[in-house]
Length: 133
Image (tube, rainbow, N blue to C red; front, side):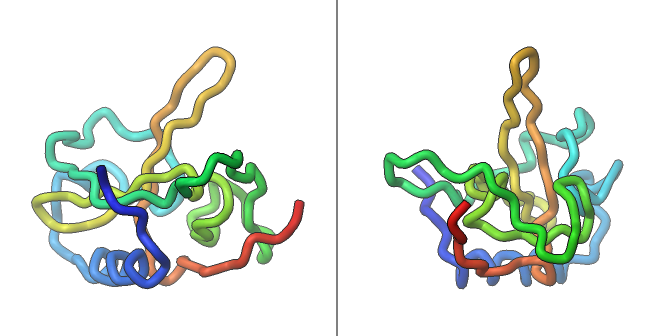
């Protein structure tokens, strides 16, 4: 079982990840600055799960998104606010070759399941409090 990451630990992973500049197979096709479907070219064996943002309590996590600057879900500059959707359903993965970190979750709809991925970007990470819907 992986640990739940608090904001301080998540920020440390994000800063370390954002500082990586080497070319790696984990980013060979796309940088994943915003949410995207996980590319088939991503070498799954190169990733290891290092933590989760999912709360352990029984209550259903919010589906509210956090976009105070007018961004949208797919925006590359959308804030990463762990208490809000979809981050509250994410696990954090690290490339074992270059140490870049990614957020991952599975989007499920009536007729599909889509594994989504986004780079963990320190400059977009916010410790935003959860507001009432």
